[in-house]
Image (tube, rainbow, N blue to C red; front, side, top):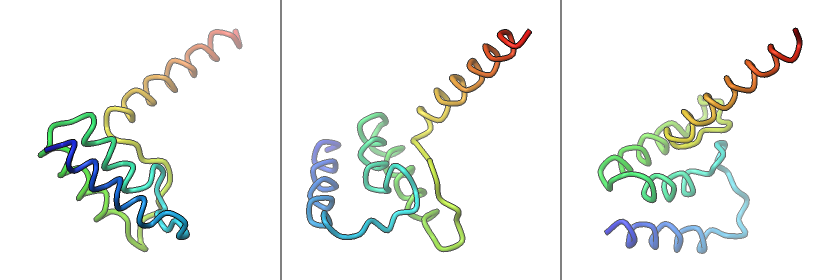
Amino acid sequence: MKKFIIKLIKKYQEATKGKNPTCKYRPTCSNYAVQAFENYNIFYAALLSIWRVLRCNPFSKGGYDPIPKYKKELKAQLKAEKEANKKESF
């Protein structure tokens, strides 16, 4: 079922290819959904995808917004880099 949903999203991406991207988030909402379905069960991935589309509105600031797994990894990496920079400055 997950593979079928991912194929549907890819078909959507192909159909809209060449049009100006209007998603203010990176990755785009459709890429976010694909990543969610590749990394989580179907129900959680659907919930993440729907929540992402609901957040994509004129009142949001947008920006870099990866799926939760990657947010945790990115925060840990940034924290490690900050600590390494502190050690180097002493």
